[in-house]
Amino acid sequence: MSAGPGDAARPSAAIELRGVSKRFEQVVALDRVDLSVRKGEFFSLLGPSGCGKSTTLNLIGGFETATSGTLLIDGKPMGDTPAHLRPVNTVFQSYALFPHMSVIENVEFGLRMKGVPAPERRRAAAEMLHLVSLDGMEDRRPRQLSGGQRQRVALARALVNHPAVLLLDEPLGALDLKLRKHMQTELSRLQRKVGITFVYVTHDQEEALAMSDRIAVMDRGCVLQVGTPTEIYAEPADPFVMEFIGSPNVFRGRIEAVAGGGAEIAVDEIGRVRGRMIGDIRPGGQATVMVRPERVRLSATPPPASASQVTGRVAKVANLGFITHYFVRLSERQDALAYRLNDVDGGAEIRFDEGQQVHVWWDEGDARVFPADAGRSASASIRTRACETRERPG
Image: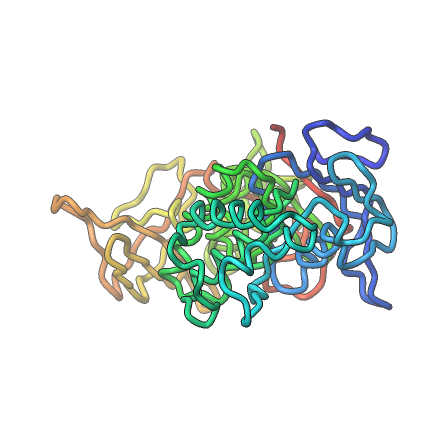
């Protein structure tokens, strides 16, 4: 669990935030955040623009000062420690390389500022360039490099100082999709090889899921949930988390019945749907049901009686190669999305055509039912509850 304000610093914690808040005049950028990052892990701060993730990174790096609360790095309070004296380095989206310096001069710059002798810093810089696969490019200028190569130079320059923590503020944001995917793999490989704690800021859900040991999902200055990628995706503790990670189907209605950990919800114009309860669910109240598209099944014949099901008509079919997206119109105001993996082995496969009437169904355990006041959806504009960090055990 995240460290609380009264807990002693744990030896395994590289970074701890205890009740940290940050205000910019009347704007609350962070609201009493408790967070613990373990040594040697790849930890991502994930959320939409304005959620507070970059502010959190800037507080750790010493570029901003907390309004209240305590920040510790390796168990030591950092409130009065300036940025250049903290055991951290930062890689920005812009890379911030010196254009008049060669690649190796850029990498060894930090060592030169520390007074490291020329032969030693040149050897260390060369070793780091080898680590990031830039051998033979020592004498090039940044303008002679591709975006991916410049990003590797920025990484080498940050890592050559052997910081306790490396902060990365959306460093892949300027790259094209193919290179971005490649660099995700390279960053993960590099982090595991050097063993340094990485704190990575991104708004890209897929990027965070692919690279991270753990993820903190943030919104409006609050940490909503901390967990592994599997926990965040499969067991969201908050409707915002579920809606932000992926593209779930969302149904809203009145709670009709509650039994055995499940709830039945009456949704206007389409009927009743069921799912597993998350939070305080009581008959008569309003609730939100969410189910991910890969858990939604389609059939031309009625599904098992135990399934939660509604009927609709296929409005659009999008074949994306290995997967097909089915958009089903359930009513004038409600659609459903279902993913179906295509049979790549050439076997028999059930397909549905546009205009075809289908049964849309799922197992009760594959849907989540949240109280209507449990949070706000990613498309809503007002939070209806206080911030509360939720973290899965382990």
